[in-house]
Image 1 (cartoon, rainbow, N blue to C red):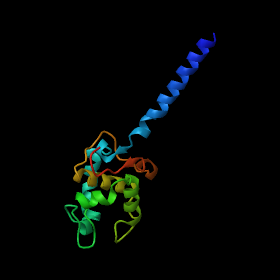
Image 2 (image 1 turned 180 degrees about the vertical axis):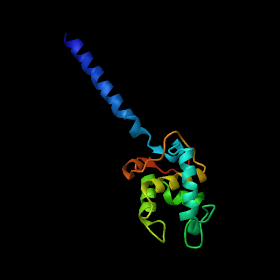
Image 3 (image 1 turned 120 degrees about the horizontal axis):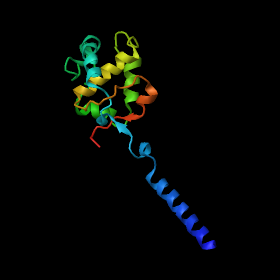
Image 4 (image 1 turned 60 degrees about the vertical axis):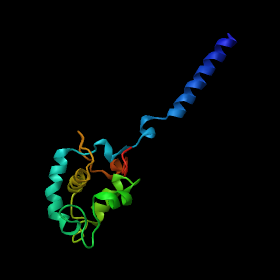
Length: 146
C-alpha cells in the first residue's frame, strides 16, 4: 500500500515538473507580426488612409521623408524590435498625424498599421488587427522571422 502511494506521488510530482518546464503555449511563444495578425482587406482599407493622412510626412512609399522616419526597412525594424504592436499603435494613436495628433479613430489606426505591415512584407492572416492596445500588447514586433 505504501509503495502504491509512493508511486502515485512520484508520478504526480513528475507530471507537475513536466508542466512547469514546458509552460503554457502562450508563455512559450508570443505572437509576432510574422504570424499573420492582420487581413488583406484591412490593409486595403488602410492604404487610402495612409495616402491621405501619413504620406505627406512618411512618403508615398513609406520610406520616410525629411522630418519623418521610414515605416519599412532595417531602421524601422531596429527601432521597433522587441517592442509590441501595442507600443507602435499607441505612438500612432497619440502623436499622429503630426498636423492633428489623435484625430484618427482606433479602427483607422489599426487599418493604417495593417497597411504598414503589408508594405513591410509581413504575412496577412484571417483575423483583423485588433483596435485595443491591451490586445496589441500581446503581439511582439520581431525584426527577424522567428
